[in-house]
Length: 160
Image 1 (cartoon, one colour):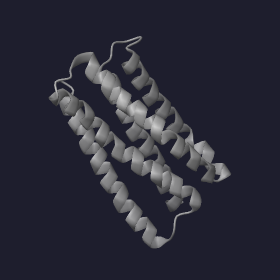
Image 2 (tube, helix red, strand yellow; image 1 turned 90 degrees about the vertical axis):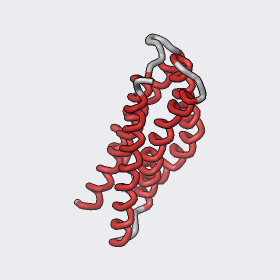
Image 3 (cartoon, helix red, strand yellow; image 1 turned 30 degrees about the vertical axis):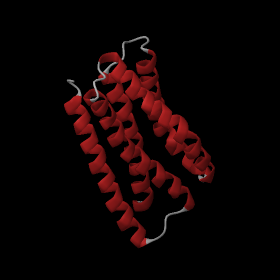
């Protein structure tokens, strides 16, 4: 599978980003507690930084099991969609904890999430393009973008 090195790199970036976030959270909590609205952001950052490592390994495992071609990318994209369907209601329920002013900063995260969902749906349906590793990587990197955008927002709220 030609995309295997990109998937491995994506998993490595995801794990490194998760570690960096962990160090930041430990140092930030020493200075004081997070506000209630920031708890949701922290959950989103952690989930969206760990999940791409798992999602990067799914096609590699399926390829090892003999699944290939369009079926590989359809099943892998379906895994992302199913996890979104299961985890989405939990995370959206936590949105009610956010202070009123924080909703504007979630705009980037929302559109990156929409991009990931569209890429997965296109891969699962195979329309208008055939399922591909490129669309799958767009979805996985969009999830990393959600974590990174939220992380930058959290850092600026702590520094400013």
